[in-house]
Length: 579
Image (cartoon, rainbow, N blue to C red; front, side, top):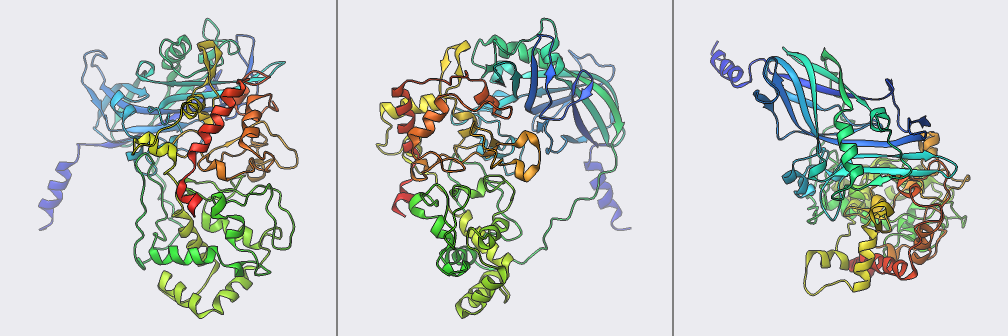
């Protein structure tokens, strides 16, 4: 009985009858739920489109008690709440916790962000936070600000093209108000319907062809129109008692005591917070062990090939050849990817079939066209060396060498291989006397400017896939190099919509990583720029941000192409050149 007063005090501190409100958004076309990417869909403008991307940010939820005036009533609100919604799935349903008990008659929320949040440093948000750029891929960098809503897809016509509508900036914040009858007497579920057909089919019908993109520059009527249509496209489907949540899934690893000396992982200003491993926290001992393994040729069958043989620091941890050569002299099928800034990457290899570095490690060790060795032989080689036995015990706290421990050690070493100190970075930070030349500045301007003749913008449109501090969106795209012999992401997912898509490589240190593309087909940066400047293979999976360009390409003059190359060369980190 002595505990009773303490329990009563604790209960009194909680909001009376507080519950959790879960929001679920269905994405519809003519009343039917959509799955992205959608199939070919006719519109009232006489066009046929398919939607490949719809993602947006939610904020500022409000609930109005039933009977109060929408204009003057007392709204319950949360200004510290944000959510990210991706119509293709994979994002958790937004939840509002500690909603006071009561009867509510209206739900209001914003698609977008208040100006202070929009312009604040996005990299202050923890890994997994809805506003972390790695989570939402909706941040405009380095110019700042978020895309509030991104809608992309293809226009099917005699000459197929694409569309990309990116709504952002303060005038394009969207406010949605939904009448409802919500009895908060516990946990509740509100299901909303987002009618995408209303964006295109409301009178007057919206035609894609003459207005295939917007980037929300001031005064753009396309952005204004889409903002208004989005605000009227979301309605209530149902209000229900929330089902009992499932117990949390096991973490997938056992808790382990911290072993060794914690490694101090530094995140440079301007970079988001990464999701570092928590089952095996980074330690000095494991990082050093991984470094030794990285350069150890005993991981290959002939004992003549190490990880560093194909991931040479001289080439920013690539190998300088179109296709890597394996332990027995056989040639692989893909270009060697750089191993820089992997702490921020959640899908590995050109086709994204692996999530963790430690799991990826086994592939080159055992692949017949790479190191061509067995796991058993690698472990036996390590066990035969007393120094390795001692170092594995120091790094993991107990005797034993396993493929998991080898993978973790290599993973920890590679997680420390970061690069963020190029000439461009130093100039952007205003350090010392570092400045870009006029040609390099012009290249940067082209890189960060969209190609939108309707608005007089004739940039190179590079930033859509190569934006942000890493100069990559870490996503997968078809960039007009379709090859039936290698279908990229399709090999991992089996989805037709993923045929021809490959991981977007970072452009950091790109001057050191030639040749380029997944198959190493382009020997120089000049060839890469020429590829994007001219006509592309316009199959149905071509990324919409490329498909919206004219069939002949964007046709930049030679001086602008040279300026782009000059800018790309500023992204080299001197530390890698010296290494």
